[in-house]
Image (tube, rainbow, N blue to C red; front, side, top):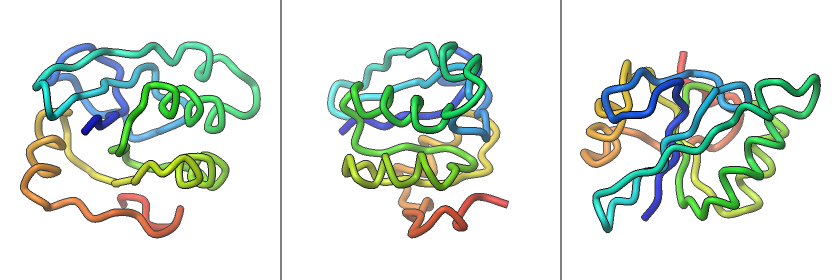
Length: 118
């Protein structure tokens, strides 16, 4: 299973970025291989409109099964849901903490855009 985390860093100890579409990077963790890769989202950050949709397409192309973020806007939520990607919202400070919560079953899937972490 591949899980995308929104971040500004490049390691598991990097801070979570609670924005989806404007997150500078996505760390994609492969639970089967216990490896990860970092995907740049500079194009989404710099776009005037449609950042969430572009970010959703980037994450979908990476073949992820799940996304962990702080908040996902309505348009991106629709694109991700249509691609079969489960969205989880968290307030965890780092990717490592969010991954730990994910593995422990402490994160619940968002049913709608309003389920964003508060």
